[in-house]
Structure formats: C-alpha cells, structure tokens
Length: 351
Image: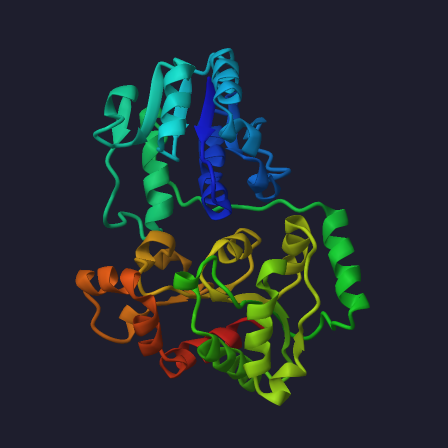
C-alpha cells in the first residue's frame, strides 16, 4: 500500500500530523509512506524512521501555475493507493484529485466533498482525552481501518547534533547540572503573545521559584527588539539568569539545544509542540481566543501544563469571538498572579 499524507504550511501542524506515519506503519509495516510538506518545515521531521519519502512544495512551485501543474503530474505518476489530505485547502484538494488514488480522505467541506472518497467530520469534543488536533488526525485514518491509539509526535535528533549542542552550551558557561529552561517569550503573532510586562513578571516568578535557574530566550532574529524589551522589564536579579544571546542559528540547532533543557515555558506555538516531541516538559500560555482543547489533551497532565484565561474566570463562546477581535483586553485580564500556583508546582516537578 502506497500512501501520501498532505500537510502544508505550519511547523506545528507538520509535526503533529507526523503521528499518522507511525500509526500506519504499526498497522501496515510494509506500506510505503510519503509526506507532502513545505520546504521550510523539513527540519522537524528529518530522520523520522516512519517516513519513506518527502514530496516538497517549494515557494517556487506555489508561486508558479506551470510549476505547480508539473508537480501535480509528478504526483499522478506515483500511483498512490491512498491520499490523506490533512491540510484541506484548494491546493491540496487539487493534489488529491490529480493523484487518482482510490482512497482519498480529508475533513468534510461542502466545497470539496466530491473529491474525496472519505470526507470525515471533525470531532468537537475529544473521545480519548487527547487534543482535538491529534484525535481528528487519527480519525482520518479510519478510511484505511487504522483505529485510534495514543500516539504523540516525535522528533529524532542524531547523537552528533546532541553532542554539538552540549558543547555549545558549555562554551557559553551554562552548567547542565543546574536547571535550564527555554522561554518562549513571543508567540507567532501579536494575538498569540502574552503581554510584554506580564511575560517579564512570569520570568521573574520562574527565577524566584528556582534561584539557580538558567534561562534561554526563544526568538527569531526579526523579533530581537521585542525580546529585548521583555528582557529590559525583568528584575535586575532575573537578568543575571538570562543568557540572551544563546540560541540556535537553525531550527535543528534549536531542537538540539532544547533537548538539553529541563522544560520549555511560555507562549503557545510551534516551540511548545517541538519540546513535547523531544520529551521535554512544557508550561504553555494559551491565547484567550484559542480553544485549549484543540492543542492540549488531559492525557498530557502532569508532565505538561497548559493555562488559559477560562481556567480562572467564566469564559463563553462569545468571549472567544470577542477575544479574537480584541485580544489585548482579554490578555490584560489574564494576570500572572492567577497562574503562579500552577507554575510553582510545575517547576518543582521538573528537577
């Protein structure tokens, strides 16, 4: 059985959908599994033993109708038996259609329903205490008789990557026998980023609870000014614990550095998903407009902790809609004092 799984765009999505490969290989060991992803997401699934081949969508292919058509024809020549379209957009629907695979599964949409042999309706409530992101992806595999099991994304680092990161950290005077925490200081967008002053207070609380803590900031070069703003707001003593200029220069380097951390704490996003896939405990701050159940399951407790404003005050569907339009007002209600008890308990459990 030859299977193509389609999951484009976001790193967190690509990593989460990688569970499908382990699930299929477990049921069908001799199956040939291909993963269609965007080029910038390759690092999170490198060395994954369950993936046999990558089909890469580059920016050049996406921006050219001619190149995209040639790509569609190359997919057609693969003669897939099954296509699992997790992405579910127009481009992936066309890829599914051109594949001519007898079995094509995707989430149900009125506009593309006719393309797929198995249009699957999403769950709104988890059936197995996992996140909806995982449970709905596993539901797509019902099209090939693969039932739910408690799979979690995994990232595979090489021994040399791990050793190289260790030497780098030690060269920056980081003591790996003491607590080392990666701080996700910024989200992927403003509406997914805890307020600057609150994040500084959150970081201060970490150092207060763990006086020997060493902190690394996770940010990309274009975010350095915002990251520095948070650093400047931290207490003077807290700043002594922050190694601001220690970071990976590539995604694989970031992953290898995170491997040596005792936990990752901060804004919800791809970094949290990657830390979980490395087996690193996480403490996640969810944006008020997000549904925590989409990306966090009860079966992740107690190793992982996730907090949302709804954990501390009444919060309706109308509030979620209002929070998406005006996240700042709702974020300001989500005060650091509310989550300090959970934070202290989490930090106790990480060392």
